[in-house]
Each structure stands twice: as C-alpha cells, then as structure tokens.
Image (cartoon, rainbow, N blue to C red):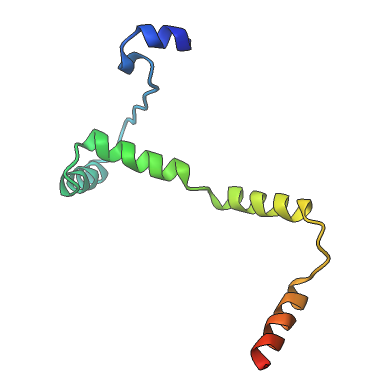
Length: 91
C-alpha cells in the first residue's frame, strides 16, 4: 500500500472522513468559527479533529495512571508524602 501511495497523488492515499446529516445550526457555527480563524471549513475541521484525537480521553488517562501505579514498587503512601510536605512547611 505504501509503495502504491508513493506512485499516486497525495490525496488518493490520505484517509478521508465524510460527516453527513450535520444540523444546519451546527454547520453555521462551524463555518463562522472557520471564517473567524481565517480558515476554510475543511482546514478548520481538520485542525479540530487533530486536536481532539491527540487529547487523551478520561478513560485513557485513568488507564495510564493505573498502568504506572502497577509498574511502581514504591511503598510510600499518599499520607506519608503529605505528612513529609507538612513537616517541611512547619520548619
């Protein structure tokens, strides 16, 4: 597939997303925001999709936290950390 893409035009190898049945009011808002950003609707929507896809969901963040916690062998509890911080402030 990659070799074929190098031989073809760029647009033929880039995935596309087509959104149907967008409510008129939503389309109007997106069009206005694109114009305010001095972008075409296509450019604006692509930027928004990229931003959205690169931001982890809450579920993904929690899974990362859980994985890190399982990988950590520390025996220091949250309470111990808070106690140490409070002792440092008292000095």
